[in-house]
Length: 239
Image 1: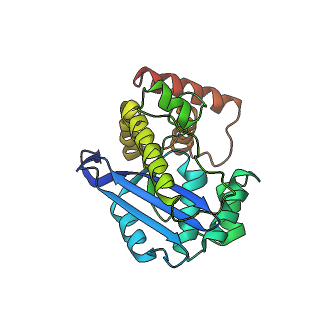
Image 2: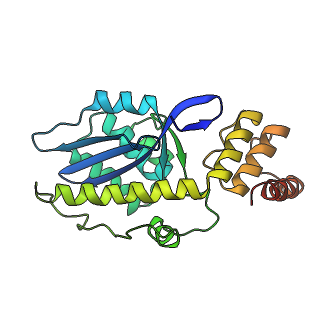
Image 3: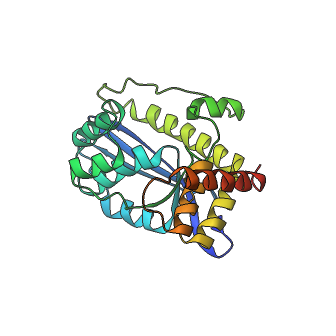
């Protein structure tokens, strides 16, 4: 099994979701062995909630923007939300800009349903997964092939599954590109007993500083300066 760190035998699996008003899919694929699990929901085909939950308990999910999007969507799906309810939640995240803590409160869900490493802040530039896939020379760059407001017919489902596969490819390629940075975050998480795996360099240095000196609020100027010095040290060991 591909492992998060030397003493952790939890398999890593890329994860991505597609959400429509009458169709939902959550797909996971392990990095080692490329074992794929597909969880769909549509009219006449309920989501296998128990199997999805058990699968999530066995892996560490690798996502791109999973903390803000896929995580809340999956958490809501595990509560038995319908496709229409998931689409409403999706719209609130994408169009209304609701943050995870807002989603938790609005939809009465708990977001800690899966262990994940979200790559969106680990990368040093603020660009989309599609742009990154181009820079990484992935085999295909593709935008959402079906308008998000569409009703999904049976003939459209394979198109979305193929698109989802391509996003998993991009997420996996991004993980391998930043594997050194992720390994550093895993090691430092173990040292400081705080989860740094999905944080940017700046977020990581601030979290470590807070842990060291017991800061529970945003740092003052002196603490911010110390955080910046720590960031320089982190970068010297990362890039």
